[in-house]
Amino acid sequence: MRIPWKIVLMEAVMRRSPVRRRPVRRATVLLAFGGLTLAAAACAPASQSSDGQPSAAAGDATGTAATASCAKDGLTLVTPGKLTIGTDKPAYEPWFKDDDPANGQGFESAVAYAVAQKMGFTKDEVVWAVVPFDSSFAPGPKKFDFDINQISITPERKKAVDFSAGYYTVKQGVVALDGSTFAKAATLAELKDAKIGVQAGTTALQAVRQVIQPGADPSVFNQQIDAINALKNKQIDAIVVDLPTAFYVTAAQVEGSKIVGQFAAQSDAPEEFGLLFQKGNGLVPCVDKALGELKTSGELAGIESRWLTAAAGAPELS
View 1 (spheres, rainbow, N blue to C red):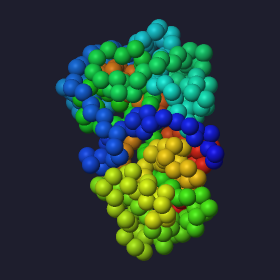
View 2: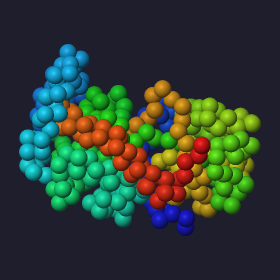
View 3: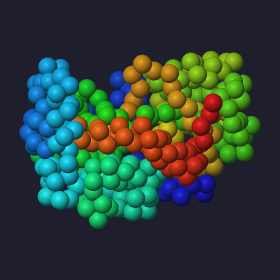
């Protein structure tokens, strides 16, 4: 098989967020739960609004105090002296490797350890907890300091939990049958003559029309499985889905398929994955500070390039 994660379960798809479908994503509907606020002070006690977010009145002084209180010894943690990170099991590639979040390999494992290091934790001071995806954003106490599990930031989920700034902006993936005319496309321009299939109501449809701009309007299917079957039957040349779905399609749904490449959709509100926290957790500004440093230095982009482009076989299409 082309990639090492060919044998995966439908659970891999079920872990995805519904943010795009309302009706904008595929058939993985996970509803956020009602709000229950439980505070756990760690970083600066910023003034908070009713949804647990720092209020505008807090101003710059709040941010300064938060930064000052992010010293490792001053953090309130689930286990003193340890940073506990949650994720689901199995932990699938390319987000993790060998179902072992603690090895530092795979995109999300690498991100988690990079954040931990910026916060002053050594690898030995990071502890992993198994947290089922759908229970991670349920309201109530958490047994982790933050959870990383391809969880999209949505207004509904923010009612029950807090999120960091986004650490990954979901891109679109082009999937074709290996050996087909368009399987070797290296640019978006090379896909203009392709007959592309997409699911109705998805951001993939917008992305094809706005970014690829094929000569013929894409074939629109009511269900994703219909587009997949059309690809299998060679009725279309390629399908466009979000990149996490593309990994699953090539791994478990369409034998002999490949990810031609990935590209960014044009959107005012792109889907982003965020680190998830118990509502009111004061660690959020500290983690945001770490993520900001990783973005500014280019380290976060480098992690994405390594694990979601090179190792995952999803080159950037421009």
